Structures are given as C-alpha cells and as structure tokens.
Amino acid sequence: MITRPLDLAAKLRPPPRNYDALFLVNGAMIVVFFMLFGSRFVLAPGLGMNFKLSEMPGAIEGAAPATVVISVPRSDMVLVEDGMFNYTQLRGWLQKRAHNEKGLVLLVRADRRVPSEDMGVIADMAVQAGFVGVQWAMESGHSGSAER
Image (cartoon, rainbow, N blue to C red; front, side, top):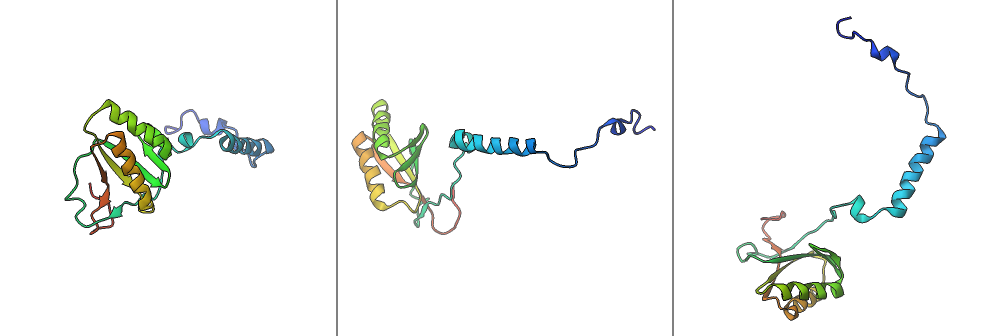
C-alpha cells in the first residue's frame, strides 16, 4: 500500500497482442519516404568512411602548419569546408580562396587508394591558383594508427 498508493498499473489497458496492418503500412511509408526524399546530409551528417592515409617514415617530424585543408577520399571527389566538389569545382574554389588571402599552404589528406596522377593534378591546381605550397598528409609508418 505504501509503495503503490494510486495503483496506476491496474488502470492501464493491456498492450496489443499483435501488430495490425496499419503499423506495417506506416513503417513501409517511412522507409519509402527516406529512400525518395532522403539526403546523405540528413541521414548521415558525418561521412563515415575507411579513410587511411598513406604511410611514410618520418612524416610526423617533417610536418609543417597548413592554412587550408582538403580531404580526397577517392578520385574526383574532394571534401572541403564548404562541401563536396569534383576537380573542376575544386579549381574554382582554390582560386577563390587564394584570391582572398596570400601565403596559403594547402594540406591534402588523400586516401591511399587515390592515384598519384590525381595528386599531381591537385598540386598543379593549387599552385596555379596561387598557393605558396602543397603538403600531403602522411602517417608515420611505424604504427597503424594516425598520430596527431
């Protein structure tokens, strides 16, 4: 009597024993809604990927501060602070950034699966846009995890 003075549990109706068709229709409509109208930015605000940097002995010791950072998870896909670009769009973005500020250094975090030809294209775009230097993010090589 002291622990349950109002006996609210006895006044609740019992839970339903089975799911009716309306429940299944609602679930299907939610799935269809997200498939048709869903955006990768709504459903996945952070892009989860198996992003592995290349390894190079002595990479941490030779690191220098960079002013602009871009990520290249695969060929012709570049992630910058303003969104996701292809190489054509990246050229314009780099020119706009270099026009506003002087002495910029670009740090490129490229996945190890990105071809070296693409790395040369990005470096050429940055130099033509007016960047002072281009650096490539590398892991140290003596451990499997990224050091900061």
